[in-house]
Length: 249
Image 1 (spheres, rainbow, N blue to C red):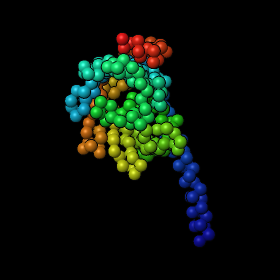
Image 2: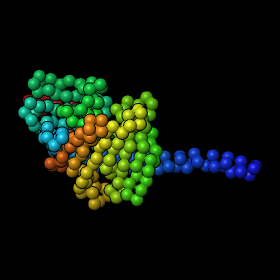
Image 3: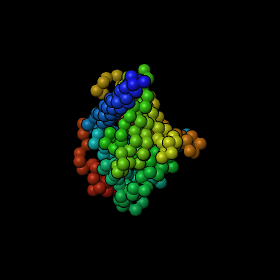
Image 4: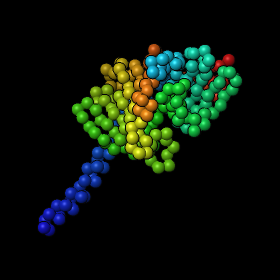
């Protein structure tokens, strides 16, 4: 009986060590993904937004690996010229051509659907999840790592619980699942048809990003890339309110 008790105590000590190693591995995988995700000097993307198959908008985006982004709407006419400046995950501005003014996007607005889609304003910002989430290995298969992320208390995050599936062959995510506080998966984001991922250090983009809202009858919103370029750099002035006003005129 004493021998069995000792074995039980040893097992109880060993299990947390195994979990710690798994969590450490999960964090390394996440950070490696973040590094690949931001592996460019400057990125230009022109894309179309569809909601339930209907073309809602055409936009172009100028991105920096730091997370800064300037988004400009080209279509339709009633929103043409509208621009969104992302300075950071918590600082965003919008230029409204009808009023010729810049307004800061309030925190309670950032979690709303953009142009009636399943994508929110916060989804436009490039997140570095490892800074705001605790990470655990949820599952590993021959083709994927699936990481479970839960927000660190006190961190300003839109999503409290995310599950990210990363492809082993290219190191990029092909699925995000978003969970509410009750553990229900209410939204899923898919990254489809990656291109130019044949070299380990080459940044690549999915041809389509699909957001599925499970609480709205699996309503689909799709971002379809039309053009992708990698300029040498974008100047600091591009990501300023002054530039936002000047470029709109």
